[in-house]
Image 1: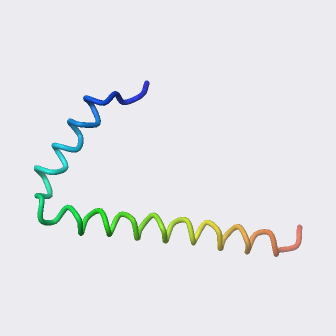
Image 2: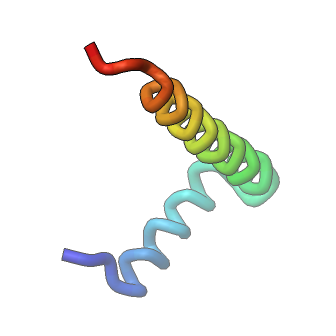
Length: 55
């Protein structure tokens, strides 16, 4: 089950109503930073686990 264009449009409208047009760039920036941090942590944990010897 995938989201169609109308469902995505509706979700965007709801987000716009909840956060307002003024705060939306800040919210998206924070979301981007969170995703970036998550990717970095996953990469770091992968390096750490590959450096550990098997027990």
